[in-house]
Amino acid sequence: MYRSINHRHLMKQLATPKGGLMKRTNSAWAKLVRSAGLGALLVLFLASVPSASAKQTASLLQATTAGNITYVTKNFTLAKGKWATLKVPCPSGTHVLGGGHYNSGGFGDVIVPHSYPYDSGDADSKPDDGWAADLGSMYGTVTVTMHAECGPILPFYRVATTTVPARFPPSLEGGLCPASDPNVLSGGSRGPRNVQEFWTYPAANRWLVFVDNLGNLPRTATIIAVCSTLDTANATSSAGNVSTRSQASVNAQCPSGAPYVVGGGVATNTAPFGMRNIAASRPYGVTEWQVWVDNFSGNSQTFQAGAVCIPTIPTG
Image (cartoon, rainbow, N blue to C red; front, side, top):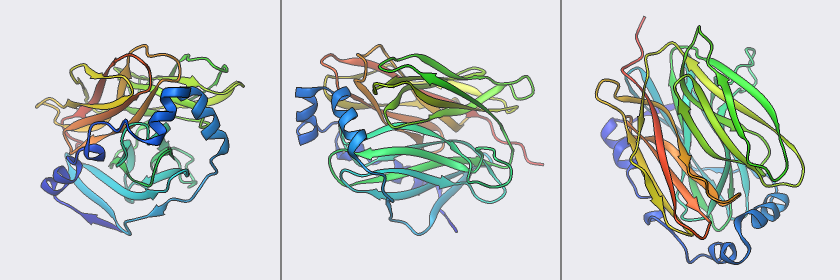
């Protein structure tokens, strides 16, 4: 079941600062990062943390509609030291166009290797049923909010699988959108926990993803681009700066001629291998895309949010 909420309530809900502060650098986890580095600690964490079923904290999905897009959220509680794949489904009669994730933690509290559209196991085998993310809670119990942007059209889902060499950050992409569905709406990656996306970003008719393979063996990763015939406009934020061992955010605002956000992501600069984490990436209300980045390196880093926006989804 879905509970409708109005736009003003949604904006108020989503405008709460992450973790109450822009960074949390005094946690036990942050101190460990300073001494050992993210890469080594993640390998240890990902090898030892078992999968867990996160406790659902809201019995009803929350949904609001704007521009013929249904914006759906679902809350979960993820306990300290636990790992979960969390999913938010689209309403019946709609298909997923984009999605994201957010959590109440601060710097270094939640690691998110992958965020992607998923297939629920229905007859069509397309990843059109909702949005999922893989999350590990490093420091304490957090609230996770999953987001899905859903619509009455069926996009084309370009799926590409590749082998990622060990300890190597290659460039991956979901492939060009086909001529029949030339405009990218969103995208993401799916794979093992120690293959972590650090750049997932719209680029006209394709979705670009960069990953770090933090493990010692080659791993398989899947990149998914969501494509359609909808008219789109890409918006970018101003360059954000995240200081050493802290967390920061930026927002990309949709233009007035295409005010509704359907997808988004983040581009980071060349931080050292294994030293960045996309802590959150989500629609901010219905007209912006917001990203939060953790910087585990010893130098400040720049990053940018990108949003894919549309005028509306035509009816009929």
